[in-house]
Image (cartoon, rainbow, N blue to C red; front, side, top):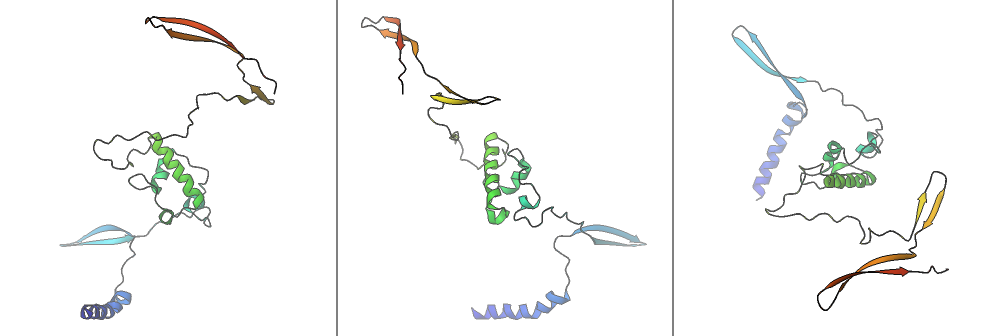
Length: 199
């Protein structure tokens, strides 16, 4: 087992000089233009390196995350799917902060916007693969059981001042359906009156 590692180390030392100083390789991210030159019967095809254009510098280079660096802090919403798609995986989940480089505050905001975009159906290509025949449940929304009920008191705001309004039912007329032992159904009404208590 020691012999292969010794050979590998020897080859590495032998070719270290060639890789380090003898052979020059172009930078990894370069564009090349194919140039074809014909001189008589000879055709020379070569690839010339195109100089990279200057990448734009962010307006706030000292910002701690990409959103802060480009001054996009309060300029995006859940409908900006091109911006949001840079921070999500192919199955629609958020990429971790160590990969995106976002600060904690912006990571939370992007996560909330991604969730809202999913609910609005703006990211249809970023859905997790579900088994065949699976019917997804509707997401549980933040609603209470009594959301259809009115509160006992509410505050109405007008242009001039706040007005406190209390709703109290003093009387009501109710409709009743009675099932008689003979099988007949009768309809009746009843009046209910409540006297307001002085509290």
